[in-house]
Image 1 (cartoon, helix red, strand yellow):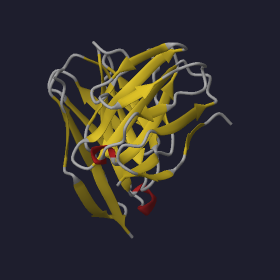
Image 2 (image 1 turned 60 degrees about the vertical axis):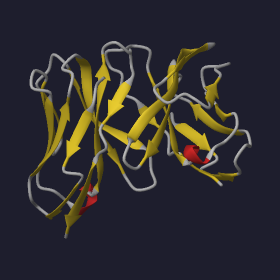
Image 3 (image 1 turned 135 degrees about the vertical axis):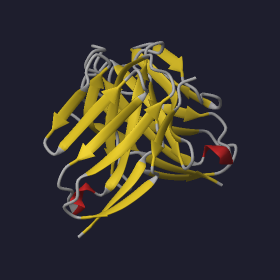
Length: 113
Length: 114
């Protein structure tokens, strides 16, 4: 059974710092991996999607990497801003269940002004 | 703009009552999903549908049912609400093409079962 883990559960950093969020998964047989952002009381917003054949994806100040063989992904946020404060979730699409996602429990990020 | 909406946003009900949560999307997506989000468990898949008249069970489907009579709507029914079903429920949709299958999420429904 695929399990997705995100460590740490919470992270607090001063504004302007570069930071890395971690995601690990137990079964390397994945179709893709997505990073989502969730603001309090809101739904999830997709940030980046990495196909299993790709190594990384970039969008603005965000860069996500994927090492499928080791079961790891990182989300790099450059020059963090208070508006980046949110919970970040990663999810893997498992090959056996088309379009079914398995989610980690998220990292709650706080950027202090 | 295309969107996905859920109603109600908040619901309080009593144990044993039947409850239906609505999900409506205007993306014209074939795929629709229902998740629940709980502390300590993250998001877990309840049911999903790949098109009209198609429904499938997810990992936590006991006590829930769905039906898909058109492309836009996938209502989630709790047949006899239990306190263990107190949670935040999210609906999502995605395109049929599996390669670019970003899921778009609704704002959620917070359900409390007393």
